[in-house]
Image (cartoon, rainbow, N blue to C red):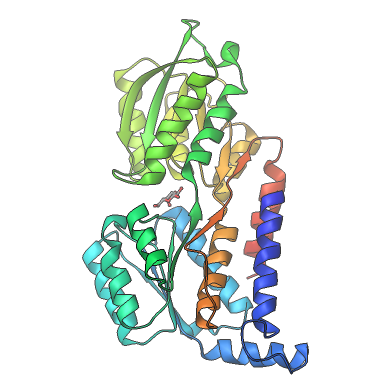
Length: 355
Ligand code: GAL
């Protein structure tokens, strides 16, 4: 939790700096006056948010926390405009255009397709609106151009390699004896991937397996399919896989929603997850944390939406206040197993209860 603490301290300090005038010309007023001036000015500030798909479980948690945090800083609810882009790039471009026409003070965008973000960047830069991308990282070339041209554009996210490595470690920690249920010396596994051409999906798929291979496990892939980050789709994939193949020893899911779908499918054929098949996810959705607690999931990886949403809001505020940001702002994943699940539950509950 050290990283989370650090992130929170940085977030609080940076907002404190803005509030106390380090970022503006409020140096001569008392901190009480500064707080009210700042809160009053945030009340008029308008932020536009575009989320690739609002019914994505993780992004809905993320956007709820973002709105909650902005409101806690003094933004008014009516001035936080949140659009869901229905996983449609054309819809998202029209929404960005609308936000530009509304002359919002900053935009926070979770791109549908990170490979065309230059269009969104151009629209924001031409209209002088600072832009913070979240969750789906644009290409290195795109990020380099923000640096080169000194644009008010940044990205906030996590390094998905870390989440894949943590998934592999969670399983490796169980040991060969436990994982290799059929005692053939290899681990038969299903891989349920997020979405095509998605860097989180690519890295989690690759690094979860390579971590196990590097730890000496022989990995035998029986099924590898796209579950679109979606519980129902993953459930269908698992049902189909179980009907056509021998029972896998492990099901690696690129996120928790899909892990929850896999758990349902496994239970339908009277297998006990955590005993007959070992499943891992990523995100730390509340339902997944309950599964970690009860042993249905070996573990998950906290995709720290609290750090990410707060850092995105803080970056937008810094731009609005005339300050600069780094062009990449990173948060850390946290490995979650039965040993620390209560700590993560307490942290995520505390944030949702403070609404
Ligand atoms: C990932 C997250 C997934 C899904 C995806 C959308 O970081 O783990 O659950 O939300 O982002 O791009």
